[in-house]
Length: 149
Image (cartoon, rainbow, N blue to C red):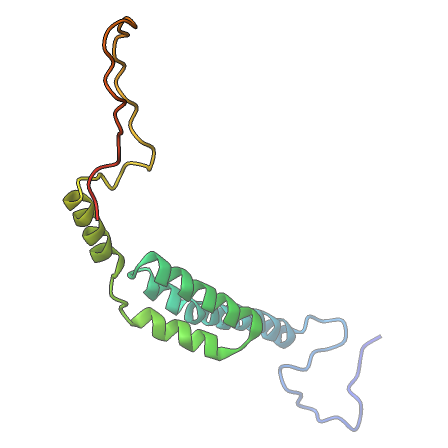
């Protein structure tokens, strides 16, 4: 049985209207377009969201970790102030305070004749040969850690 057009319908139908049982190309095209658009916009969002972390890789390790934590907090809480704080922190160069302080500590250790790398354990005394008891014994020696203030 041949399908006929309803008498109230126009005789010229647009191309996106299909006959019953035929493939709807417009619907398939829109579905593919929406999937691609969602993936592209999501990728751009995550690239923009990772901008502070990528920028912070040029800074110190502590600063990079703080920026990464702020970016994660902003991602999960949707509070954009954390992302802005992370972005500002990534662009600010924090001066290195630990290197000069370590140098000062090593210099002071050298001045006080102590090695900064050694632990607090005292060095073992060299073993002295045992003398017979009838020999005169000197008073015991007191060993300290060195002269310091």
